[in-house]
Amino acid sequence: MTVRELLQGMAKALPGEQRPVIPADAALDVTCTGVAYDSRRVDPGAVFVALSGQKADGAMFAPQAIASGAAAVVAERAAESAAGVPWVVVADARLALALLAAEFAGHPSRRMKVVGITGTNGKTTTSYVIQSIFEAAGIRCGLMGTVTYRIGDREIAATRTTPEAPEVQGFMRQMLDAGCGACVMEVSSHALALRRVDGIRFAAGVFTNLTRDHLDFHQDMESYFAAKRRLFEMLPADAPAVINVDDPRGATLVGAGGRPITYAVNREADVTPGPLNYGLSGLQFDVRSPQGTAHVTSKLVGKPNVYNILAAAGTAAALSLPIEAIEQGLQALPGVPGRFELASTPSDDITVVVDYAHTDDALRNLLETARPLASRKLITIFGAGGDRDKTKRPLMGMVAARLSDVVVITSDNPRGEDPLRIIDEVKRGAEPRCGRATRR
Image 1: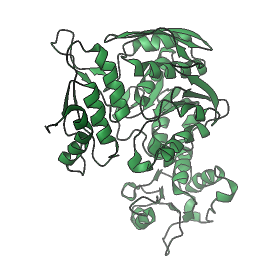
Image 2 (image 1 turned 90 degrees about the vertical axis):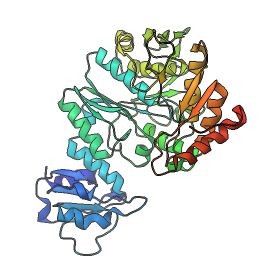
Image 3 (image 1 turned 90 degrees about the horizontal axis):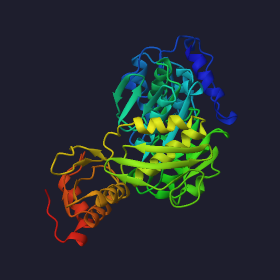
Image 4 (image 1 turned 60 degrees about the vertical axis):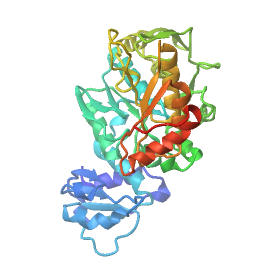
């Protein structure tokens, strides 16, 4: 593919009024080697997309990209001086980046079933369950999410829940080349707001829930929800939109896009559970769906995982995967890293559970699951990350103090903040419940 063909493909995917003018420059008739958004990672022959960030305009780094061999620059403003390479002006550089990345990768999402999962909590577990069901159905399935990027037999440690568009498209291309017929991916609110997944044809979308998180980025809950909603607005008309209607926001997503498939525990829905049987060894219950009833035996623990299983089973059934594959996939999944993960054995004097809970709602779900399973005291050790939403810190402290016998507040990835200040903010919520708290 030449640079000109790549730019023309991007232009065709844009609405008419947004289509840029592609320069009649012979320099574009060279083989394109990639799409880059970091001027430090430009290879000769690549197209450099100058993104407007919170701190800097990417167009400032165009000279560095050109010096590294960029064949063209795509930006939201015209070049201030003769840049030495063709310069394409677009209305939205992030959208252009996503469309260019999809075009360069050969649109892999058009050749496999891509399931996108969004929501505050439950994305990772739901993605692992769906992947296991696809595999049980004989369909090789890639995975992208908070824990790992799984490409065939290869795993790459995740740097972001949803990476930038060139990485997303590149990973999907590698999945396709590795024989994957499906990909399941967590789709973060950041990724949706920043258009990292534009250009993907989703076969299904899943909404787990919406609780307070990432307000350092989105500022308010309405903006946060609007970002999540974009996934469903992107769905083809016949693609299942699998929605948790026990969540207050779920009902407003029905009709946002795609073919609605609802699931719930506490109200009528398309996908619901039968009587629940659960303990530290896992869950047993029936999943009732329009496609039939699956008899579930899973090593996943607790009521939050009932929702994750309903979401996964509802998605699989709506995509016409066999009921037997749903049952086998759930039984085969040993667990999910960092999600109510047992770090002890039955012979140990205490039961140790590791969980990634990093919001007040996730912590509440975790402790409400653990509370009835604790034969003696429930001890909670946790911290809050730095340079993230500060409003949830006292709420996490309040939840931990209310549901635990002992709370130990510690440091957890303070990034650029003072760890003791973060601990003090968590303590503000805990102290009204447990009296004077002590830092550790």
